[in-house]
Image (cartoon, rainbow, N blue to C red):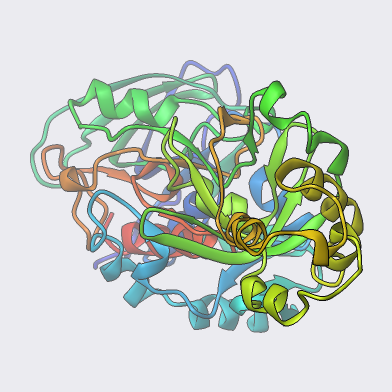
Length: 413
């Protein structure tokens, strides 16, 4: 692309009424928006990145307990939810975890691998944000925080003409390409909003159903009353719903269940439907009971060999008489084993977007190009990151989608 003689754009100061012309305007300075800005700027384009928040990339800042689980080395399309499960393949193939790792190494940042391929930044999430800020500065990107977008108007659609007039609290902009990277509804306290979905609606772009993902599940107080006292107990278990199953820890809370396995299944779970939980996935409890039929050990004490004592006590009171093993009928022990291997329980909801790590659903991928993230019916308009109907599982997959979709758009705008 010819870039000689092109002047970098300087955005007008806040509350200015002037109009500025720019090649690319990106709304949303999170992970995907920053990546898109970097790639577009590196191509010699004039890029303005705006965000209504006061701080840059708050979701990066709070992620991974402040260490940012920035990617997963096992990334592939199978770990993403979407009505069009193949949509994410193209972008993920062109910007891989190794590409982002190379960026960290370029800046001298260190990282560690945890379980299941998760990579965390040893230098902390602030270091990731600073790295992305430095890349933006190097690429000539103009960043404006505390900048509200108040209106978007489509203009001429001829090639190379400015296609959008965008009014903001920092002045008006004319842009050839407009990228929406405003995320979803999760964690409103750090600035999440429905802005991206409203833009899609304005331009007649379809949406898929939205719901909280990677979120704790709650239960009716009466149903949960026997287990509320177990808050803080964690059990290695397999949680399943439909064809999906996750084997990680399950954490008991005062209101319900949390922990990695529950967060994972929550993205797939549908309201009103039961979950199946195997609390002893490595043990054939019925076989163990048969082998110890003569034991005089009380049931709860016997079960503490396999599950936490407090849980064993509550469980025994719920599903069987807490008497020595040798006083139980074989049928009763079989039923108890079945309950532990297939605990069927129906949540009454989730803890909502306030606690959800992601928003499932979003801009319908059928309306976008999988190669460029451009809206096929609106030339020059792009959607990237969480606002799109592509949601990763727990463990760095959502950040990798942000990097990959941002890179794809950054190469196309």
